[in-house]
Image: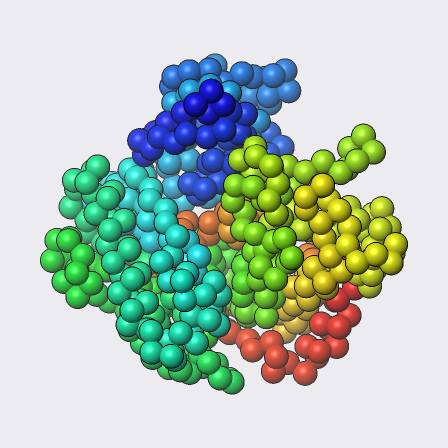
Length: 496
Ligand code: FES
């Protein structure tokens, strides 16, 4: 245990043992904590209160803390490493705070609510006090359907092969267990549960036939909200608890994106904004209070580390960021351990730096003629990895361009580009722009964190009309059906 330290997180009362020297950002990001300014120390949103133990402050952090007027017991999580046993209070869990620094205003209600973000890979459950919006507990887990394949296509295929009801039971049971676990620590009456997730998760959880999602034009007739009783799901909750899986916006744009639209407050503003989720499906939304268009792209799972020779998810052992300093590449590895592979944010950094150094060309070719470039002595990027990156990047960039064309606006008219997902926590915005992934200015990009979860929490306080209003304004576009798609896609394959 010499090289290990114990970290206790409050108010969720979770204790974990990590390697000494592990950056706090690596730990907290797993718990859904957002790092809106990307660790520059300017937003103060990652502040934690040191309840016990010691967390050293260097002169740079002190300066940031003074500028942000934070007290002696506060620290910026993005600046701290865990060197000894500590107990922290996570400020973000005290309020429903949106990462753009504004607080979500809500009408206090009685009772307690649970927000569930049902992702293809992970599941997050948060218990909230509906009177004050405080988060009482968080549970995260790997989606047990993972054994049926990591992506949506394999999950659909497994349904078609006859495993849908097994997958349905697995996920219903898992969420039921997670709810029991939070309620064991906080025995309260749950009034409502808001579940969001992509359309495939929605269909499998709800027991809807997925066939229509498996062939062109991929249009399911069952995109609507699904309501359940605790008995139907075999969850040990009061009979009158209201459980809802929120509606999808389109065949491959689920209620996770509906929640994301709510989290960006896109529907309230006259100015345009965009929301991009760089997950497997690469969902994109552009709009304002009058009109919203969304689409899913075939970005593939490159940003989640799949199809990359040494790719992996943003977990312990993944290179999450790379900088070029003192004449060499310096990689940050999540969890302060030896690098095992590279995740999406690290891949974007690698591409931008290798491009700057002219080790790769604009068409993605390795200039040395070799078939790979070493990033560390264990991790390298192959020519095929670069091709995978180009395909994913082009899908997002082309999708975005087509939505702008549909709205008849240019990129300069977009006020903010919100990046969804915990993935964004490690993202170097400058590198995102340098690779041509998002063609905007640095200061317009906002990392909004887990927008699905933020939106699910908002839904606990909103009525049906709120959801109807968003759906009425939102149009789903099938990108492949757009005649200009191929040309724009080919153009966007170029790096930068
Ligand atoms: S101060 Fe912004 S993420 Fe830490």
